[in-house]
Length: 638
Image 1 (cartoon, rainbow, N blue to C red):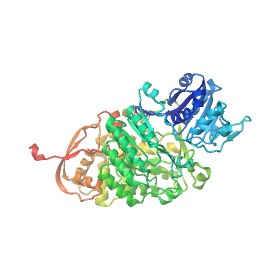
Image 2: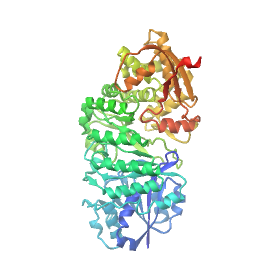
Image 3: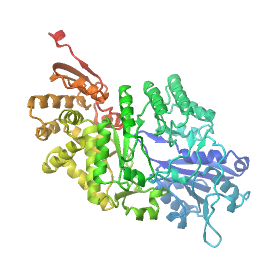
Image 4: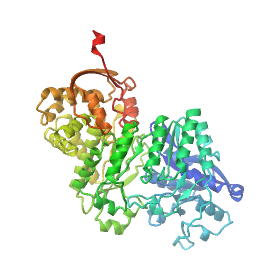
């Protein structure tokens, strides 16, 4: 029988790796056909970035190897395929996934025999049928290949995709669990497709119709995850919560968690068009301790930018109401902005940050640099020319993964300039968002910025721009060193060098986004940072006693690996003041003697564990801010 292998290498996140879900779907679907089972034998998956020479030597007379490609494994897959062809020249190599199309360089590569565009299940099945003489190669939809004269042929016929066959229920991943010491994370796909066509995304541009998968099949997969003790379940749906039955699916996930303890966490990309259902879903997940945070995303607050990328946002008033609703129920949320979108300027980007902060999104604004994805509308040459897009090619930036030790870097195309955003402004926007994320969302100066905004009408972004200016004028300070470091990182990107990640061995074997790297730098010099920052803050305060009280509260409220308990006495009731503001219920600060206890006994004491559990796991929803704060009755201690 003909042997088949599948390659879908993923990064290792801490001690966890994802199942090779896409490759598993193709194999499960193909081997659901009796003729294929009679002609082929599936051997195994390659799902980690192993040493390629070792991996190729482990192959046993391979007939065909399929490669599932995206930005985090494309270069590795190409190197793997070249090594396969060198050792097994007759082995057939098939490339597919979001990272390939008919214009890809692999369409001309002699080490790639076939390319599958778009959805792969039916195309892959028919290709296998053709390769064993039971189908005509010309009938395989979405296929790119070379004819007998070496000319490229593109089959334009669209695949008719039948019902999905589950790789979980087919038993394909059971051997992986049995042999692997790492923990596995699972993808749950309840539907496929996207009704939107955002220019920056390669999802909606596939132009496939929305497919709703059988509810019984989805629940059976959840049963499998619970039975196999899968801790983390990620829904790959483009708009989870869009359909009425999504609530039923979440209720089932919560039920299995209650019965078995698994899955422990559930995360999804939520629909922006059905806020009531999405809130109900997150309320249920939050009550069960399974929430990873609710997405309230915008990508941009600029009308011009939104028009350029074919996107509409919810009205800002609705967002404000939702923020108050989520905050009042203690449900973590996060919003996302993309830097470098056509139509965006430095001023509009800054204003977008301001609007989100003023609406109460203090805990988590995730910023992403715009990336040109292979099959997105934005990567089309005509679109690039229209908006004068310039990009830098840099190392692919995956966060919280074990650094690549194989010596095969992956690459990203990062937008660094458009007709409305210069390269200098791109750097300024990046430094601003890192300062906002580091000092506000991660909490270091959040309370002080909120106080100044409400009591002295100082705009949040003006405060952080002033901090950046102060840091530039005080380069020897911690803030100054961070600003200089960030500027150098972004200048490297403009030179097609460096990375948007950083690595710090003190915090374990992981990569970090630059805002978390900045925060971790400060944690090592926590007391010095607050000592230095007084010089900057005195620009805003006439009452030094109030500043000192507020600064002590600010310092105490951030989780650090150095303290389990903190007790604080102040002449003002800061706890009540900030609690009300977070709920959207501003009340003036009361001058009132208070004693508070900050309980942080759950905070890890070692730097690597602190980085993982507090900063990585807690980055969505302000989990690095101490929530267990209580008033102390001093009279009881006399």
